[in-house]
Each structure stands twice: as C-alpha cells, then as structure tokens.
Image (cartoon, rainbow, N blue to C red):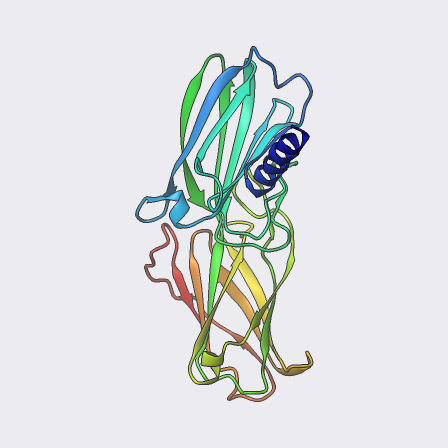
Length: 286
C-alpha cells in the first residue's frame, strides 16, 4: 500500500513539473468560490493575415490587475506542454479589472508584476500584446486578438565571414527591452546585447541575423555597434550604425559588407520605406 502511495505521489510531482501552465493568485480575497467564471481565448495574432497564436509564439503570459493597478492573477502557458494553449480560465469577483496578455517565444516567462514595466529576462523576441479594461458582473467569454509590438532589425552580412570570426556581437541603444503592457510601447532606455555564433555556412556565403526591440514611439532610432569576435572573445572587426530608424511592427533591413572597409568604421543611412509582411510596418534599408 505504501509503495503504491509513493508511486502516485511521484507521478503527481512529475506531472506538475512538466506542465508549463502556472497560475498565481497575487492578492488575498480575489480567489473565492463566489467569483464569476471568465474564459479568455487568444484565438489569433493580428499580422497582415490573421494567424493562430501557436504558429508564431510558444509562450503566453496573462495577467489581471485590479482598479488600483495591483496584479491579482497571472497565468503562463507553453505550447509545448499545454493542450489548451491560448485558452485561459479564471474566476474573479465582481469589479473592474485590466487584462494584459502577451505572446512571445522567449526562453523564460515575462515578468508581469507591474503592467507598465513588463520585462523579458533581458531578451526580446517577436512579441504580441493585448490590453483591455473589463467589468466583471457575470460569467463571460472574451475573444482576444493580439497585436505585434516589436520592431525587427534584419541584419544581413553580405560578404563572407572570415574563418577567425566565431561570434558576432550586436550592441544597440535607443530601444527598450521593457514593455509598457498598457500602451504597447517600450518604456526604458535599454542597452541591449545579442551575441550570435557564426554558422559554418556564413564563412561561405552571406548570413542574416534577427534582432528585436520595443520602440519608444513612432519615431525611434537605434545606434547599433556590430563587433566580430575570435575564439578567445577578442574584437577582430567592428562597425557602428547610427540613426537606424525602427517602427513598431516594422522591419529595418541593414545590408552591409563588414569585412571590406577596414577594422573599424561608421555609417549613417537614410530610410527608404517599402511594404513588408508585417502589418503597418515597413522595410528600411541602409
């Protein structure tokens, strides 16, 4: 009997560790049996063509805040483990609340304690958000369509990367790695760093690197320093790109030959706008 009981306990522990969904009740008195049942459905992502959330993101972070801005509930989901990915069920007493929902593909869940300063463990991926005020006075269903809130920098190294270059470091300022979950804009002057390993193919042909940031407003500019590192982490080449224009839901394309103009250089460019698959965005070539 004891052996059977121990086996059941072990199975329960394994299940709770492998399930990605986490539910947190942050404020005492919010979770009660008299609360109303609310169902939230993250059915679609608003790109140029509406697509299912699981096609573009693998994590959802959902949070509810009361009328004074305190978080009262939070739920995290992962598409790899949660069969109900995109469907969120909560119970709330009568009252007014703010709902903030994020979809992304970060390695960790977003920190949603403060709805105006949401962080992503320092790393920004393609991110979508939804923010809305709700009045709870009965059982309800809500359909949520999330909108993209990042700018993407598509950096193309047009020439072959030398064999001694093992990593490329992108250091950029002017954007934000912290999101205001209400407005969808970046809210911190961040210093973002992304280090990418150079793949074997990059030594024989051009290579592409994707970077993301949350713009502060509709007229945002980045300064990007691209450093090429050898196996010991020493700087081999470096180039500065100034005044790189970015926009929410837009793609900025930087196409450069890094290794034909000396060890250290700088460039400025004028933005040219074109259509792109990202809704309400554009491509900016430098």
